[in-house]
Length: 246
Image (tube, rainbow, N blue to C red):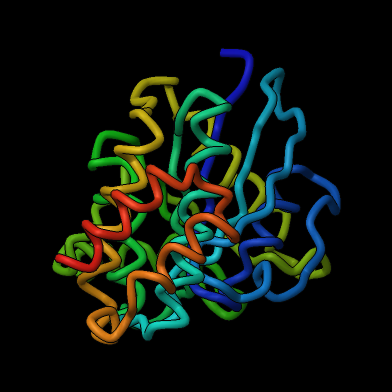
């Protein structure tokens, strides 16, 4: 396989940029807040690893279980942009779910559902990257917590327990852990569907997390779809009518 398309996701502050740098073996991603902090906004990074080109989308997930009206609008824009990019690149090969090594929150579960179940219909391998384990025995952490994760429905095909701090004594071990996990990916499970259908599936999911959506007006949706998302006006009209009815 010449290239691998990866979507990296998780809450703000879990260390996604550090994970990208860990995989790359050098600083390629700035350690900063997620792109604008908006749901599904993303940055793409490309670099070679072990003879393959990795395309990684560092993606902002849901920051709280529910979306208000503004968050819903931002999610629409971010979703369409991400889906268009992934469609052009030929779909998704692998999901990397980045989370802190502490309790599983409602937001953690929502992000897992959004990317694994909705974006990829549970058809793409998902691997878990557990961060902020500077004070932990990494192997022991996984042994203690794997059954708890499974109770929440989080069942990754692979995992890596890491620290993203380059100066930490466990950084080399972390690089070994994440490279071992990536080598275990066998190139099976790419997922892609027509962009319009993909986008609609996303919006159906967002409807579950937007209690203020009922207060949105059709003209506001049309403005977002045509002005911010650059969508064809006829398609935007049909989609806005569908969303207002749901």
